[in-house]
Image (spheres, rainbow, N blue to C red):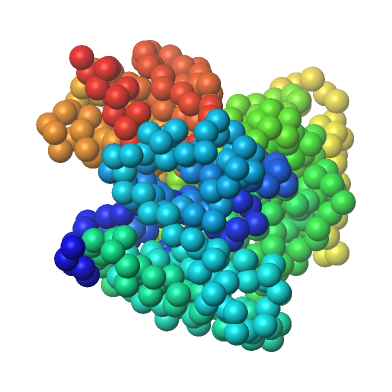
Length: 614
């Protein structure tokens, strides 16, 4: 068999999968970071078990990391994988449905034991035949045994040695796709330099062993090369949605000239934002890990009153708990950003899985007439931009803003061109420095119906805040019926006027056609890929994707009127479609909904769109 034949590919999807203790997230991250450094477009999807510690060797305990890399920008981590690395039978079984036809499957032969097969739910001792993988390129190296052999001279105990087997698998993939080992080796040296250099050496030897195994056996007839993507010139780094969100909030604070305060309670999958902000003391960021969700938002509201750019981060269950305090922020008209990284629900639901089911809660989940601005990020990298935008709107319009992310884009990553801060606008909150002639009236408004922001401790700017209804000018407590009606309408009008300060809605594709695909938030990549494929085949399909939800941008009605059919696609049971029916009642909306804890696939979207065009 001819060896070392190099085949050029446009893109590849690899899925690393094993027990939650097998290091699949690190393996996938090192492979994707290496690919990013080579200039490939990448998109990743970490897929964690929903239980904190599911039984080892079971399907419920499988942890996965999927990476899609190519010679162009990748918008999604891919539907199905070209290569599956399975560290045990449970990982093989859990991911069988995600294999492309003819895919390569690499499974640790040492894990195929009667005990492991039974735990994974196999009924025979031949998992390859039982799963119908005879037509696939299945490679069964004894990864654990070969890892032990490679590390036998280092004097490590068996547990430490076995932990390195993920690096053996990484070495195989490095050879298979012509990736250099340099970045991974530097990472390991840095990670273990102070703790234990022997562990770094063990992991590096495991990578070498895996690489050499792949290069010197006849298991792989080819190896592959994927060219760099033609990206815009600039300095790039790989970034996850949560980190990008944290940095965008820091940028907003810098452009406003105010300190950033984050009061939050840790909750999956939002915790990384709090952790990342806690690292930024060098930028003047203050963080408080509160005792619960209610304390988190209340500390943030207090910080906003004191003159900070205030943020609180959470997921769906925490947003429920924050709802009363969010009403307080609406009543006091203080700037506040609430970041909700959505996950499967209800209750604790699917903590590590993705969903878009908090939209109705974000729009309506408070007592009384209590409008807030609602926005959504749509990719890991644009989380930076929309976090900045959320801060800008909150501070310039003196209003709470809910920024919706989700587990898919929060944990996923992609190359991000680091922006120059000079390209971002200055944020100008309506800060009142001195009392005007006649005295300070806290609810006097500017042309955007925005009240002034007076920090405590300044002579002549003393005023009352609280949850009771306010006099429309003085800010003192008022139970007058006419005043309450006026304030209800004023708060709603203030939020509606934000539409004057956001971009007009755009269409991706032609301005008119047979089918308009509508989406919002983190589904952007999958929807755009599906629409792009259909447009290449001559279908008159376009995409209208929303990042600004309440208020809706200008131009939506005109866009919708130019298409024969409209289909709203979302990872819930139709919440945005219901909102559009309320806001734009003259149109008929088809729906495509999914609540599986997983993102859309391009294949299923295309199937739906094609059926609507018939």
